[in-house]
Structures are given as structure tokens and as C-alpha cells.
Length: 279
Picture (tube, rainbow, N blue to C red):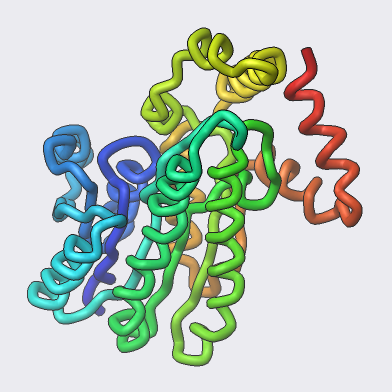
């Protein structure tokens, strides 16, 4: 059998870079995409060091022309696509009173509409190959978290979209999965560009709550899962004969998401997340 042709978004660093390396090591022909090819050096060097080959291409998930060009290049070079891994995303920390609606819309563009747009473009190819879609969500796609309204809203939307798409896609032979990492030690948090002291100073009435949240999240990320371990759980779903509709990347992520799914009235989640904003 020929190796599966797998398109992965957001591979310049962190989980995406590791997914690309591990998918290639698992025998996939990896098309590793990123918005800015100037950041390709880390993946290129890691692939060389690990003795694997990845095909690095430009793809901005918020740019329809970029998506169309990338998918067209896959068709031209390979004639098919067997798997899509939606990994590209961007973090965001704010509360609605202190940000603009344009800020919220941008979070949705990158984290939700980008996923939808790439999935839409890939579906005809995946339908033809009997392929699969694996989307990297977050525990924030199941549990709403303080100062993450827009980010969690986007991830909730991703999960609702994929959960709804899954049974429909299955009727034409395409399997759909979401994978939920918890705290991961990667470039994702630094890439948000946070200055904690500045944020707290500018938060007005929300300053004490924000300081509590940043302290709580800092503690969480001090015990974070490695990018490689998170990617291994995602690649396990990618290569599974019968992939689950939803999976988590660690025991702590499973426990956290499990709190939500067992919490019919919302009291357990609220009791938990209120402690993150306590002064």
C-alpha cells in the first residue's frame, strides 16, 4: 500500500511540529503547512535530526486563496488526500468588557472559521479516499474557562461543528475526530504575547480576578504535558483503525473534561473555575 497523504496545519512549532515528525515516522507522506514559511527552520531541522521527510508548504487558514492554492498543489502532486489534521490555532486571554468585538471575531476566524474552511476544502478529496479529519481542539472546547471567553467559544464551536459533521461524513466514508489537549509545554502560550503585569494593570475592576487566573494558569503550565507526548496521542488517533470521535491527550485532560460531561447543572465546573479567579 502507498503511504497516506496527510495535510497538517500549524506546524511551525509546538504540537503541530511534533505531529508532523511523528506522522512522518509512522509512514505518512506529510504535507506540513504554516502561515509564515520564514518559521520553517525549526521543523526542517527537526525532520533532518529525526531522519524523516516532511514537505513544508505555506497555508494561512484565514486566507481562502491560500487554502485553495495549497489544496490544488496537493491534488497536482499527489492526486489524493487521505487525512487532514486541523492543528493551527492561536491563544487569547481577555474578558469581553475589556476587548473589542473585532478582537473576538479574529479569535473566531483563526480558531473556528479557519478549521471550517480547510475542512470544507479537503472534504471532496477525503470523500474520494475514504479518509479522515482529526481536529486538535482543547479542554477549553469542553470546559469554559475564565478570561478565555472568546477562545473557549471558538473551541466549543469547533467541537459542535465536528460532532455534528461526524455522522454525516461517516455516510460517505470519512471519519471525524477531535482531540483535546490540556496544558502543553509549547510555544502556544508565549505566542499569545502576554505581559502579565501590564494586563493586570490595564484590567480595571477585573485586575484582581485576572491576577488570580494568571497565577492559576501559570501553576497548571508548570506541570504541563510535553508537545511530543500530546502529539503522540493525536497521532494515535490519526493512525487508529477505528478512531474515536473524541479523545484527550493525558489523564489530567480526561479528568478535567470528565468533570464537565458529568456536570448537568454546571455547579461542579463553576465551583472549580471560581477558584481560579479568587483573590
